[in-house]
Image 1 (spheres, rainbow, N blue to C red):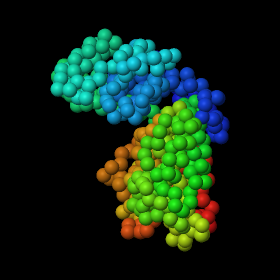
Image 2: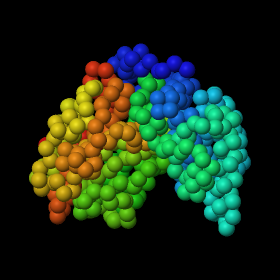
Image 3: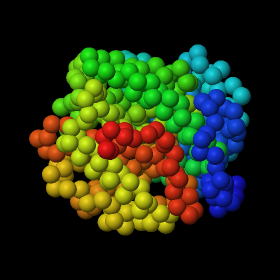
Image 4: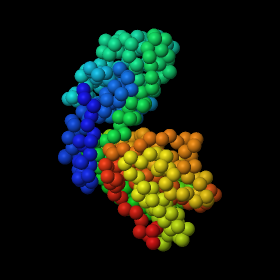
Length: 418
């Protein structure tokens, strides 16, 4: 198979309709989406000299094949279902009784029942089950790809990987080929992301309308979750909705706290939405009924400034290090509670690359290149150490051959910018 010609796709990104289709498949060639994604995986396998890939992450299985089944359950109970990809064939091992769910997917050559190599399934015989699983997979890989190939493997219970290594198989981590495959989107993939964003934005609009003193954070969060499911989304990956003093520091999950008058409410959507694409933007609201305070407006204005400065500097061909060096300089009083990333890749979930703040680059950062076809989320969180409240803002954008295009469209709060 020839290497994908991404250059031929780039012009479509310039003229892509960003108002987007609805949450259904109108206007999206989902067959083309699936074929492109599988071709991307195989291309990276060839480039990294990986002859076979065993996927167990349900999001990566869906990326490579389009097959969806019990996503949250499958993420917890590995390997409840898994997928073998070689240059010749794709074999999906599906959970008991679910083999019919992959009917009609042109990316899958065969569906077989999975062997659940876990303690809850095998009890004290787990070691025997793991060794049996490994022997079967070794024989299948040899049949499909050869006996001396490198095999990329995702996370499973440790015994399966140990058993495969004991058999002499050359095991490598599957994260690199899959992440590198996922990071470049086709125009049809971007349409899926837009559809997910527009559906999520409808849900956030409902959430915003429901904000009032006395409603609990959980009740407010449930408004979004209900809207996501109604629009054929999958689930909210986190529960990042908080209010008042719980907005600082960040990463406090929604609880039963009632909203109080005139405090801030911060939200990060983190929605695995329709078509399986991640809708990831953040907004901060004011409960009212009074006008936001001067300190609330200052926090919001600075977060808005950070966000738009960093969005404006992103260019195709820019290195990750150059981005970190040119990014907004976080004032010292906000540094301790800064968000752990400046920006990150996004597709069917959060993904490669991570773009770090310059202060974190020596310890955590790595270099690379921002490329056309990447979709990125630019982050801002500002909350002073020991401060009363914080503001979370985030936008999702597409990198094109000539610059960027904004994908998320939910408005900012005029009263907090005034």
